[in-house]
Amino acid sequence: MDVAVLITIACLAFGFGIWFHRITNRLNNLDNQIAPLVILHKEELIKYYLEKGIISNPALTPRKQYLINALEAGTLSHSESQELATLLKEDERRAREAGNTEALIAVLGLIALVVILANLLKQQ
Image 1 (tube, one colour):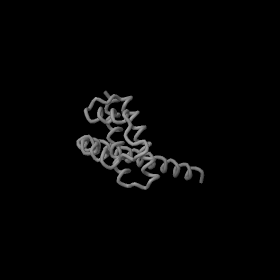
Image 2 (cartoon, rainbow, N blue to C red):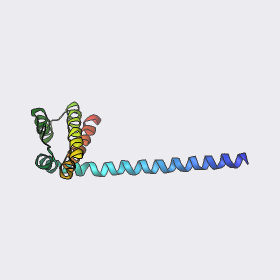
Image 3 (cartoon, rainbow, N blue to C red):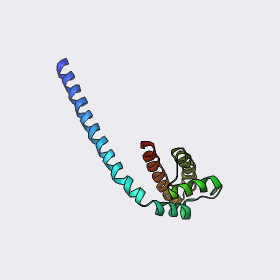
Image 4 (cartoon, helix red, strand yellow):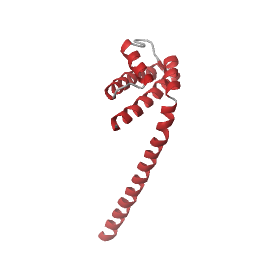
């Protein structure tokens, strides 16, 4: 009886390990497929954010404008990308609280762009 329970637990653990490995590989493949699309549409994401994503109060500060300009020019450093991501997460919180779906989509798109570029900068 005890051997049967141990064999069952071992089989379940082995099956879970295989399942987890497959899910991890699929998520990595998805990241590798989405990252080029986000980078390809960098200009559109920034333009959409500037049109729809800026929530008033404090709106576009000079520092955020500088960081967005650096992002657009492709001169954003890793530390600056982390700073911009932090500022954008605050915009995301405000958009969620306000219930502004367009602003939320714009902010999330720009966050995705910044995170992907930060990861690419970190790898270099």
